[in-house]
Length: 204
Image 1 (tube, rainbow, N blue to C red):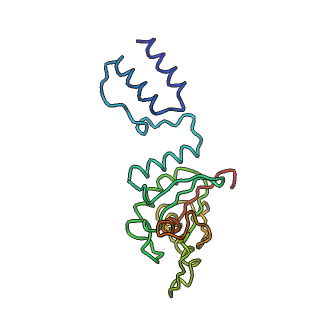
Image 2 (cartoon, rainbow, N blue to C red):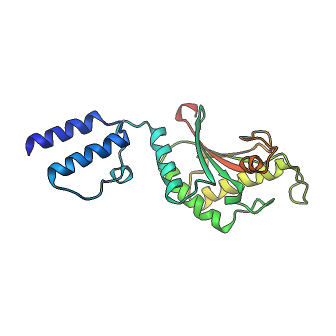
Image 3 (cartoon, one colour):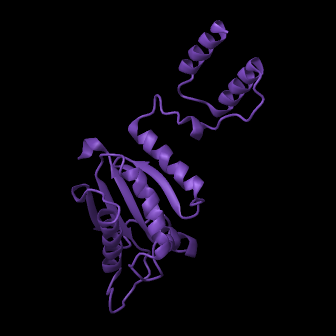
């Protein structure tokens, strides 16, 4: 028994960067040895973080949240030289042509804030639109709309979720930072978004 346990810990150390397929084979093999025929424990349940950088850990936590609440069609997680980027499509947060947060959006932002409050990084909230002009009494241009959406999102995170105000900034990009082509409805939908950028510590 002692020999088997020693072997178990040696193997766990050796596979700190876990390959899921190898992990399942490994746990199944030891289940046979110890007589456990139950379900294999999922990686999320193990909370495996050894060997991960802070950015990798944050990205994993965000991807887990997206999967858990079926946000796959509304939230995308990316990373670039600035840090981790949470792309949130506008339909999840706002009514068309509006900058007021919808009732359903508060639950989404609350769940994201639960992760953001655990990290020390600065947060930048960016508003984006597609290239279809808007000219309403309240929003004379896409600039106005993008800034208002970024502002309302950031202010909710500060006032209701208690993110420290000195960590949060906003910017409105209007139509000028697209992530898809604007010549299709699907592309324009991708571009109408709010991005929450978790700034790398070294850039502060």
